[in-house]
Length: 466
Ligand SMILES: Cc1cc2nc3c(=O)[nH]c(=O)nc-3n(C[C@H](O)[C@H](O)[C@H](O)COP(=O)(O)OP(=O)(O)OC[C@H]3O[C@@H](n4cnc5c(N)ncnc54)[C@H](O)[C@@H]3O)c2cc1C
Image (cartoon, rainbow, N blue to C red; front, side, top):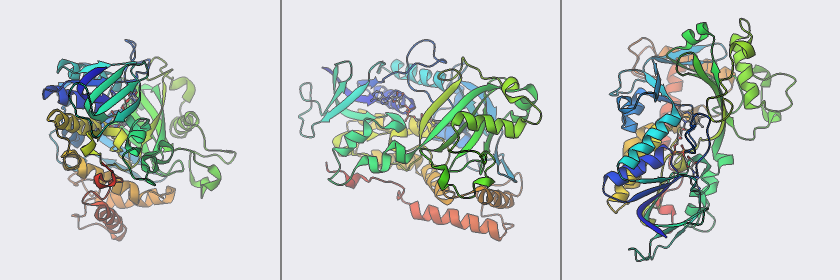
């Protein structure tokens, strides 16, 4: 049996940030990563680097890593705006309205290179990082004496190795294959982690393609994250374009898992559905349709927007589960911290989660190294709670929106964002806000009130039997 102070399951941003912080604070730390092959990581297996990566200005401070620290090739594109396109109205945001130390609107980056850099960073701090190391189970003995012989956690790895650790950081991402069974054993009868974290219920599916844009289209989207709302059915379901290096972009979408087309109301209003559809289109078909919808009049989409087959995960495409739920507290008295996508920290409103993964991981690693995780649930709320509150509140407000609601909302948001000096998306300080805009702002404020003081948490520390 190998023995460490802190064992970390999952080697994505949350896991490597935890390992970096633990090792930098003097603990022995080991990352166990199952390892996946990716076309954009020809050097070998690595973490499952979901490559659609955009960071907004204030996320830089939440992540606590400035892009100036990146080596060459990680940062791809600086952003100056986000465009939200509704069926008939568009909102362009040039400010997030939230104070930050980063001067641009945001940036996009190469996720596999970012993850590899984070891996190198934690190894330089003294952590071990093992790939091809899939953890199949963890036994937790709350009465273990500790020390060399009796670790509190025994991690059983698929290759037959066992790892003993005093602290366990769960960073296995939104599939939560290990997080759910580990938490279940610490919950009372009748309560299951899968009720709130089960991927089919709590997640969305995301699909994207790496495409080369015609030069004029690349110029048009330069500097912009572009999202289309009210184009496809399902809550927080939308296609996007993220500019990359040169004329490359990622064109993708996110949608709820297992939607039934027969249950979609007003399907004729969704620009990306067709009357002849018998089921919800596949991700690939949706990407084709959004490109046709936007550029089909002027271009032959298949010929003029070629797929870059050497990019992304495989053949220029990627399919992922994406966490779209609310976060859970961790059973810290058992020496366990759940972090990043596994804990549901990723935004329920948009995909943003790398900043939350890095920050929650770093807090978990630092506390584990100090030998006491009890402050973890307070610390992650202090560092990321405002962001989580914003995201869950927005997700709640727009949950049942259809195409008309998006148009109406964008009209109101344009009223709220009256000028360049606007303070962000929902700025009630603007006296010009019309009645509709005021209603939107009130709905948002109400949701924030509903979830304030950490009420967005789905499993509280007191729910665990430890
Ligand atoms: C399509 C898409 C677009 C996104 N866009 C953005 C964006 O623009 N900006 C942004 O900030 N965020 C974005 N996100 C979210 C972001 O990718 C996640 O929030 C982030 O990856 C979470 O990091 P993590 O370390 O918690 O989990 P992950 O990155 O998912 O890492 C988990 C790791 O655990 C490993 N693992 C799982 N189970 C085991 C096991 N049993 N044993 C060993 N290893 C295991 C996996 O192989 C994986 O490498 C996007 C996500 C998707 C899917």
